[in-house]
Image 1 (cartoon, rainbow, N blue to C red):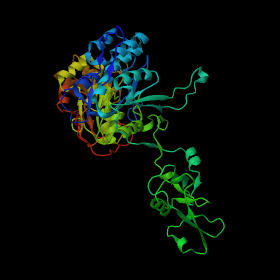
Image 2: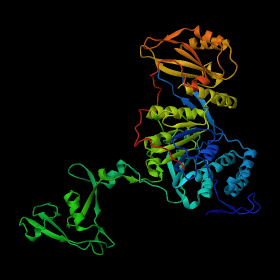
Image 3: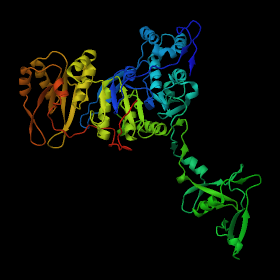
Image 4: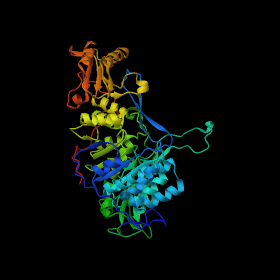
Amino acid sequence: MFLLYPLAGSRAGARQEFRPSVSKVPPTMRNTLYYGDNLDIMRRHVADESVDLIYLDPPFNSARDYNVLFKQAAKDENQAQITAFSDTWQWSKRRYEELFDDSRNAGLFDLMESLYRMIGQSEMMAYLVMMAPRLLDMHRTLKPTGSLYLHCDPTASHYLKLLLDVIFRPVNFVNEIAWKRSSAHSDTKQGMRRCGRVHDILLLYTKHGRQKWNPVYTQYNADYVESEYRHVAPDGRRYKETDLTAAKPGGDTQYEWRVKRPRTPAARWQADLDNEYTSPNPAYEYLGVRPYNGRIWAYSKENLASFAKAGKLIHRSTGMPRVMQFADEMPGIPLQDVWDDIPPALGDQDQGYPTQKPLALLERIITASSDPGDVVFDPFCGCGTAVVAAEKLGRKWIGIDITFIAIDLMISRVAKDFGLKRGQDYDVIGDPKDAYSARKLFEESPKQFEIWAVGLVAGVPQPEKSADKGVDGKVYFMDLDGKLQWAVCQVKGGHLTPTVIRDFSHVIQRDKAAMGFFICLATPTKGMCREADELGFFEAPSGRKIPKLQIRAIKELLDGKEFDYPKGYSLKSAGKRLTRKGQQAELGLE
């Protein structure tokens, strides 16, 4: 048991025992995306010791807003830019006090007081106040064999390591991994007076030092192969010679190894597997070889014979055998703590999401620290690369994000990459399920409500109100000639009149959209429906005529009454559909 000792006069008072809060929530039985504050969701929905692997990439980059670029379909040249989240952490005395008001955070009181005295009311302190209770709860959710990877940059890594040392204990620190995320920066001519910043940090901790670990190997580089495997076999394969003797005895190690060679110039020794020396061939010479002085054979006589039969034994001029290790048969270099072989997410992988990490990075982490069927948890899941990697590798998963734009993107990714359907293959919890909760979302954040509503109809959200010119989203499909078309979407949460529909008709015509979808919280009036009918019809690929302007209330969409339009065009996804290793399993949390 780990005990924390407070500083003299600290807020903690007497000695505090590190004892995480205990979750009594019912088990979650399916892969799940949660929309909301991850601290609240963890405490209500993620049970004690229920997770095998946690990967988190919490945002931090002082005084900068990140934007999401939704790359739209090929013939629409515009890109919609939407602020996904702001990671400019503003100091709040109230939040700092709330940290100490919650007894579940007692194990962190001393450290947080010390940090506050050192760095004061800064953005960094605000960030640590946000992270501290969340990391504490993540420790609670990990199984005894679980691991946590915290992805950060050098700006905050040393502060976060202090938090993790207190929560997980220093003895459970495993690695500080440096991932080279970009190529060299050449800003010297612009006045840069420091080394280029090209790497991120991954802090790896285990729950109790009994973590799962599956060895991972990386490829040899060409220079290493040429220098280490400098011999070339007749078939062109590169190999190196390895000594077959050892310093410590054990097993069948005292025998004489018999070799022979033709009595011709430049002939090499070869294994005398048939003991031909007992009835020697005059055309051959024979020799018995023993280990060097002070050493013994590292392998039994049977193993050396197996090497010879497999063509992997070579003999020196003295007759001493050496084993041939072929470069193409070696697993590679055991994974080290500097990863410079994984480039950033580019090309088809790029979702245009800020801080997006490459799929290969998450695949490496998940492969090394979990087994098929294990539960992978990402509490800051952004565009969902950890979720995608977990699904691809046959793991179960939990993802949380505080912006619905991220949840919407994840829903889209798992649909396009794996054909998964929400409610059928996995659950989404926290987004509105009825008209009342939809209205509450609208009251809390009109923009989040707008993004959520567009997502209900598989649309792509558009920019902020100041720039959208009456378009909140677009839904893409193919026309009669197989050309890309789109329906523009408009979302309204407030008062409705026929004038709103009349104005939306002009937007549809102005943008040369094939159709228009109007989404509203309130029930549309008869006057609105009459205005919609005035715009006429769009002819579908089948020849069927479909109303050009359609109206749906949120309640209708939630009840399954979709917009009528030609379905079949798939939005651009992260490359080709991915294949899963293993089958989708039930998510059983204790």
